[in-house]
Length: 365
Image (cartoon, rainbow, N blue to C red):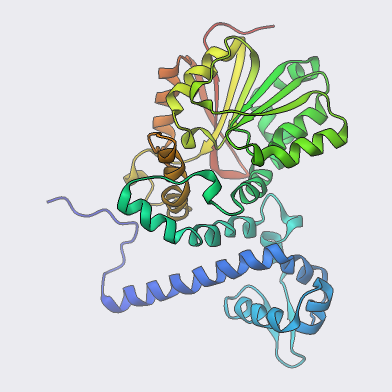
């Protein structure tokens, strides 16, 4: 019989496992409270103050002291905030602030913490999914588009000009000259907004299933007077626009679709000769045994179970899941008709992979 695969070689005893699991429960509680603190701006407030009492911190943040004091107790016992008993003051070490404040973006881990309470809020709905095999619509998830937009701002928007565009050497020049760009599954559309502002000669379009996702950004574009950016609610399972775009992007979107294979085939056909498809997705393997040491493996599989798989199944999709994996992604790109495919990682972002694919019809000048 094959030996079981495990990410840990620690001898198994009830006592050791009980201690390990108790630590997990503690850490889950800390992360849930860290998400709350992020949303309330408490980490930013702490970073802006010298050692301060709970009253001073609450006053600076415009919050109730009793709740702030209890939150601080979680952070102190969790090893995140320092406590000085003599004068009963609290402080946030600069090394911790570098991982938990808005000024630390794109390295703000408190943004990632927001996935935990979001997933927990779906427990009752997921119970039904497990029993029926049915999925969940995007609208079933509270604040989902807000959470994804904040996460995307860290991983994509903040890295767009210095790291992502240079993955394709000629791309910035072509955007300056003026090309037609589509973001398939654009979500909030913040990347498109940044691109439309930076490259006024190019034309940008965003498609997403849910209009409420990009509605705030559409209004922002109007207020900025941008005439080169449009958004459209669209179900991408029947995407067909032959030779319409010079650049198509998808940021962490393909595996959630109702028909990812059809979408990729449509994208390949929608590129003009010399067109480029830039697809960002989660870095990881299609095989569980290869993900045992993945630093965010449990979180990514949890997001997959609680969100990516249900929303795909709800649309009649295959439920590829968050960790559909790089092997499967490249295979599906080739089956869609792409022939020139490379994948790259960014040094500052080990959790995502970027595929650059061309439709094999030659490069434009």
